[in-house]
Image (tube, rainbow, N blue to C red; front, side):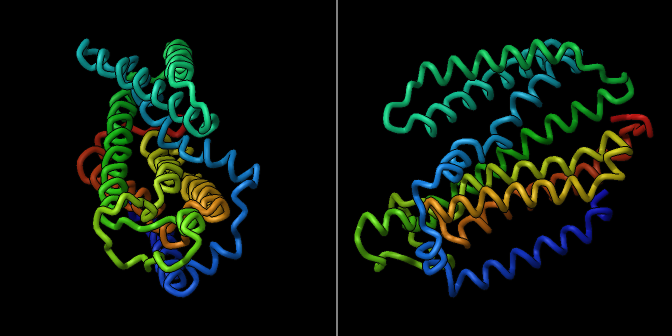
Length: 281
């Protein structure tokens, strides 16, 4: 499977290298040029852009709950699904009501949505010989999401890079640092972009061909849809002054790279054990 994505992987890392090199010269200038912190579309994307990462646990947990036969795994799936849904609700409350966030409303809304997802899950029919594949991919999606999150959070703390909007608050660009400079723990967390990293969890679409030969024929879509979506989220982060070009490039690349490593491991360990059928959707 990883070989089928080889040309897409090469394209991606060429774009990555070009953006990081370009960022050496235009990181600050680009943010100055694009800055529009009250842009309504970009503010909407600020709240919703990370949804791919927020949906991993609700969807994967629901699949684990219904497809696993062992009770402990069912309980785990139930907890993961509701826990992930509650956090997604908290996330929405935080970004859409920043001045007066109602945490209880956010958690409650998330739990309610999680219960709906769990209810709908019972109507999803999965053939017996495909259950193992779906279970493996559900756990893989959760692991990939948390590994990606760990890398992003550690790098944010270590780099300590000042955001563009923080520079505006300071009234000076003197605190700006290039992306390759590690500042240590400063309290600033611009590099890499967490929002773009969250959006890059849409690259989990590249796992779809593991359970469907129809999706194997659409593997280009499984790459380019996440690429365009992540790129859109990345652009909006520049517009609102939250990140620089290098921040969003690295954030998206962490998610992409962790996903590719996950696909490689699945290739070696599990792919040949998954029985794919031409009529699967």
